[in-house]
Image 1 (cartoon, helix red, strand yellow):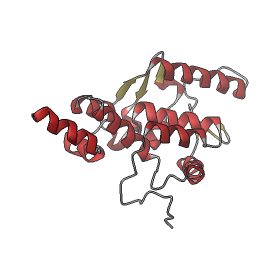
Image 2: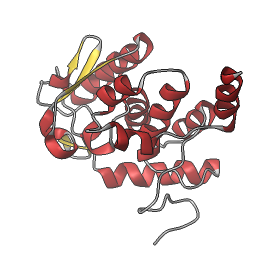
Image 3: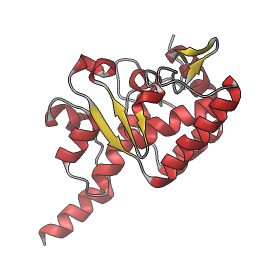
Image 4: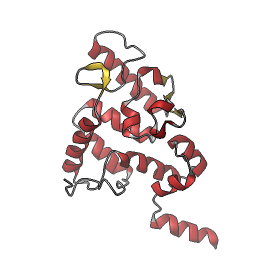
Amino acid sequence: MTTSHDAKRSGKSKTLTSEQLDQVIHHLPSYKHQIVALTMRNCACRINECLSLTWECFEKDYLVFPYFITKGRLNTRTIPLAPKFTKTILEWKKYCEKLKGSELLETDYIFPGRYGFNEPLSVRAFQYALKAATNKTEITKFSSHGFRRTCLTSGNSKGVSLRTLQELSGHKSLETLKRYLEVSEEQKREAIMAFS
């Protein structure tokens, strides 16, 4: 059943401002949920891809999304990480090691489920947490896919080329990618001014 706070399954999730994303992340109920959200925000990945990551996928300053966890199992994507986010992931790793009580294995999930590191957090568990956070912030029509849409739209508005966004997002075609991107009234005005 869809409520006023759910993104319609058949529609697009809303894109948010940076401040709105910060609000949603702040209101997620646990550190784990916050790191999941930050990963989607920083890597433009899908929720299933994010939750399928193991520590083998983390290398110094990038995350590797192996082809077998991507939609359509098309290509492996290597996503460079911003220094601030790399630090966040390293802090999360230390927290996980403390939680596990031993060194993490490469096969351990970065976002473990409730029964340990050999299974990932479920999509449903994250969706429940996100719904609670959006209810608290009174942000409507935002789903986990909104992190991806917002990330790609933000990159586009800051002048990142469509080809670069396609490489990072793993979209098979530019046409598919273009459907993700929102264009603001301000961007339209700036374009018109550039014509003069």
